Image (cartoon, rainbow, N blue to C red):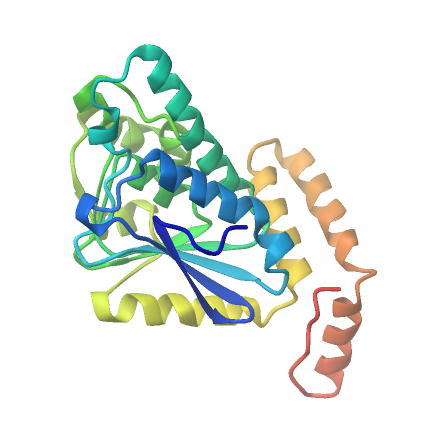
Length: 264
């Protein structure tokens, strides 16, 4: 994993929590190819190079935008072949986020438009500032959401609401996003990161292998039938039983102390 990224900024909050800041503020933190490649590199290698990490928070630089999505200035003049080749970088980026075993929390600090909205929908859950706005604007430029927007947004807000938002490309507020289920809570801009860090800290104090298994069971289970989801849940459950963390958790409970989990 490259530690000297140009388009994203990494902040190690503590050994278990890392903050990623999308850092192209002059371009409203829009994804160019470089940013897509750097985000992919981070997510694909975090569990190798930062083994103590347990929770990831993603936010944007500044107050104006979380991310304006794909950088249309970079795409100006691209022919079909070049467009498809560049989009592969975006596809790998979103797949690396969705496939990450660690919890990924969004701190949506401003406008999340196009691919920025798709990224927000791909996180495990998100908080937003009270001035954040959202929109899936792809149909306004002749395409459709291409990094999960038709899938993750629909799963978050429901089919009919997603159709309305994607067909029209209209903007919606943080309060609407909360009401419809895209985000989990709204805070002032100044409170957004502290609140995101607070929930990240609570998560990081729990058994990391158990959290990973819970994430897998929830996400993969919802893609299948209830009976198969129940089977998956049991598979994940029984993977936690032989762990040292399970022994430590029960022992700490009976000794009336906080557990010390090691991810083993």
